[in-house]
Length: 281
Image (cartoon, rainbow, N blue to C red; front, side, top):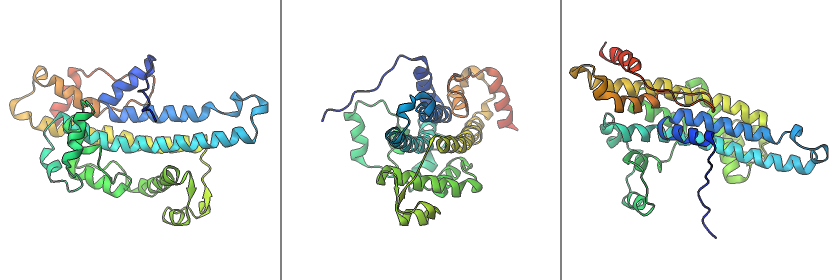
């Protein structure tokens, strides 16, 4: 079987999303999630001729929406990993903690494989993207707290997120079928030995819930990263021209754009002056 080609498009929104993927993981997560919600609603009854709204269309739509839910949860996992990887690629501020992290296992074959793929991935991506354990909210909080002194998931959000990961497991590994074991451990007894009916409304609710986590990663964890780096510069005094390039990159990590059609903001000296003042206080 042939390897599929890379998907490309010259659409302006795709170029904008690529910039967000490279510079602002939380903003990229929003764009991806909203695109999946739009895709789920694209096949509404209003878009189908009356004769195509019956059982066959409903079954196909259900299968598509299951797949979209799996992608939405995958986008969250990517955000968890890519944010840490992006920080590691930009600054050495957290290198010592990363070096001591037991959940990061360095495998020589894995590192060498990046060469054969002609990859431009940085050290952070090589270290972080192959890691496991991102479906356990408590572990995610422990990792982020050890690195950045901030937890991306609130205690109140953990039970709901655990249920979403159980559903994602069922979609990814059991074609949407929820085993009795998974139903019990996920607090979903009504779904035992059945297929979850994930529709466009549920996808929208899931997206809204995950947005809170994505925003927190940018605005709270990202801000902590900016402040931690700036504190290493305070002894030399504020110098925007000296720090502009690195500060701008870090500030984009701390940016959350909750619109697919809106581009990332320009990082100005005013942002730097305000953040530097906080770092030195």
